[in-house]
Length: 358
Ligand SMILES: *Cc1c(COP(=O)(O)O)cnc(C)c1O
Image (cartoon, rainbow, N blue to C red; front, side, top):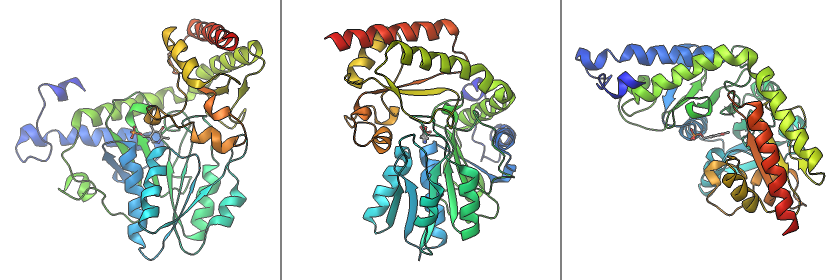
């Protein structure tokens, strides 16, 4: 990224060479992102965030068929989908938010029952950002395709962690974000299938072949491309590297804090995430002490951390319990070490013990 933040600071849309020679690195990054998800380069639109990608995809599907006024999504989506549908509801759209079961799983029968001839778009995530739980995306995509409904998938948490081949899975729109796969913040991409209708969300210049106005964040896009290439290279060994450590963290905490319980299905989830409830202990208190011990954990999504709201994801899974106020999510990276896991276990056990006694 560095050359594009210092010497090569031109504008890729300029006609003079100092700018226009930046088109090549943009196109290289487009190829790198496309390769990671089995897309063709023309199907990748760079955006400023996955939030923008999500908003754009839903907007594109709705614009293609303005007479259709129904949207199907789930109760556990990221706020970048949920809050957009809250806004669209005020504009008169009808929203179905599919429930999940105690393990965070979605029922295909519920989805099938929810779609109607009025449904313009189904927007469902691939992997949940709070629990790591996976939705049956290939089956959802087939169902939508059979019924002629556009399908948008927020795959931010899945890209770079699971193999994704869009040649095999008929998703119309797929969102991803650089900073969730080792790249910089403030840049994302939207896959738009060649056959899917599209309408820009940001109307402006001709950047991104008229699909997204605004001068390109060249350094950010180059960073996204590089992160995508590295993630693709490391994908074959990702699960085998990260999951044993995640499992060790989870099983040791559950063994040493017998009241604790896992939120999320044991196997239908990402290899790097664990979400645990510590009954009787408020998330905030636990997080504060963990932070003091140098452990970065969260009680939901970072995007909502400044609100007092309990996790809407865990609440949707376990509505009758206090689990949503008493949960902590730990996420591992490829670089997480066994020593860090041991430190997190001992900090978790000490902290929870202290809070239980107080
Ligand atoms: C982080 C995240 C987003 C938002 O991505 P930004 O690039 O930060 O806007 C959307 N969906 C999911 C599932 C996420 O984890």
